[in-house]
View 1: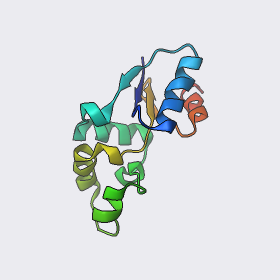
View 2: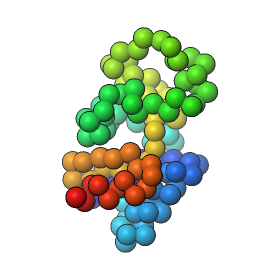
View 3: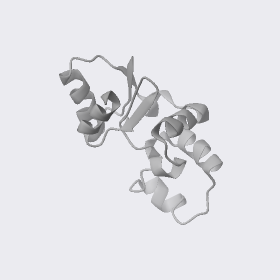
View 4: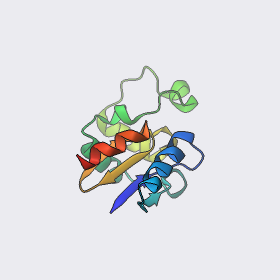
Length: 114
C-alpha cells in the first residue's frame, strides 16, 4: 500500500498525487491538514524519512516566521508544534513498504522503488 500525506491546495502536493496516478497507482490519501495528524504519526514519518523534525518544517510559512523563527526548540517540542500546526509540514510525503520520501519534486517518489 502506498500512502501520500497530501494538501489538495498545494501545487507540489497535487503534482505528487498526479505522478502516482500516472504510474497506475491508487494511493491512500491522507489530508493531514484537514484531518489532523498526531505526534506519533509525525514521529513515524520523521523516522522513515531519516531526518530531524525541524527538517520537516516549511520555514516559508508566516506562522513559522512570526512565532518560531530563531527560537531554540527541541525535537520533542517540534512534534507537538507540527501536530498543532500541520500546515507547517512539508509536502507531499509518500510512504510505501517502510520507506518514505518528501516528494518534491515528484520524481523523487521513484527512489521508493529502488
